[in-house]
Length: 183
Image 1: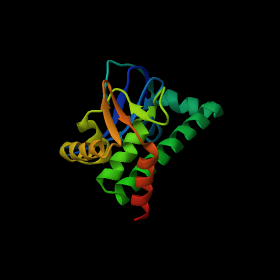
Image 2: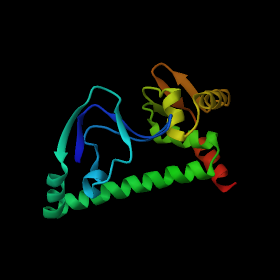
Image 3: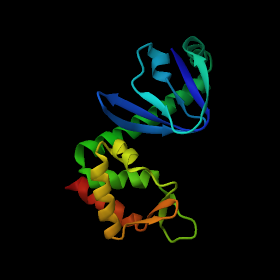
Image 4: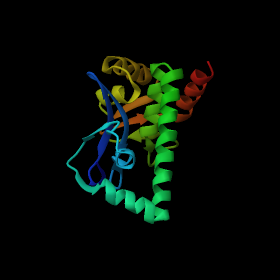
């Protein structure tokens, strides 16, 4: 067992069951994976797939365990990391359990977006995500995501721009999520 850090590039955490995959999260430079297996010696709970050419640093599990044991600041860092991952997965589980596809898609689009410079509240996703990736992130199919994105474009809530997907009214997207959560 070992733990790996991403020194360059990025990757998806992917849970695979039979032929279906669900993207659990993404990690970039400084992100790590394999810590659960390094801690408890059990098999990894998810696969990791590189999105881009990546450089990884691998640390053997016994060395990692020694660092956790001998360095309280390092151990606290990992406790905070694990707490954040649990909170994130709890949020996604609640969305998957309580929301239909459209509000789950809205949640994911907002999560992926960043404030658009030079605009009054618009957000964008650069580069625009592939529909297959969005579907894998929300536990749906590409065709359903395509249909929902088209409806959001028709409603004027999402616009396709060169190299970006623009969320033109994030407040309305959040309102629709709130309505769906309380339904």
